[in-house]
Length: 184
Image 1 (cartoon, rainbow, N blue to C red):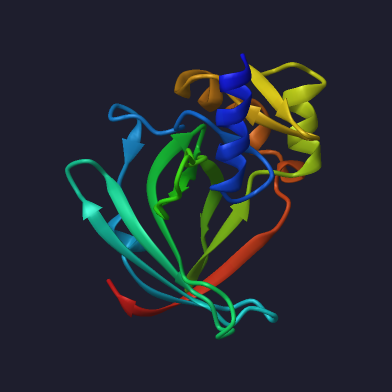
Image 2 (cartoon, rainbow, N blue to C red; image 1 turned 135 degrees about the vertical axis):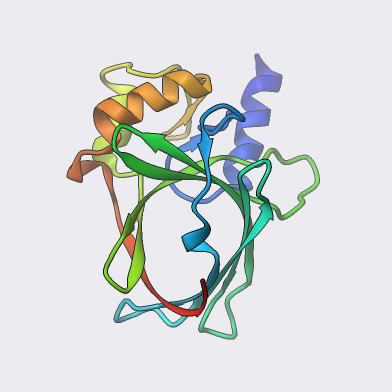
């Protein structure tokens, strides 16, 4: 048990967001691919100056490479791998950092994807409301690391949970809007 808690603690150090998962949401069977996301995207939010580069890592595996280049020179570039998954009638990005850390397990985090007229918006699926559904309604297998739940349920259970709770407007904590600079 101590090993599992140590492992989950390391997971928190290597992920993004406040609701991480040990297991992916996306599987080979459930992943979908949208070539329309490939390209260079500039953050269109008022206080955001970064750029996201999205490319197909493997069309066969339905996998993306994402590089976040912050607008502030003091911030670190973030490299991610991602897969899209259909949840209900919406699409969710299953993302994981590619940064290698000694003794760390990469945590999966999830973002709701919404295409807009001239861009795309990504919503963090990690709100306090959503975390409370995990913890208080015991809707998903999880363990607590400090005051944050870490999902230990499998992919199918995560998908069912997000279909029930993750598409609610209260499930998102924040969003990032982007407009296309280059690409398809």
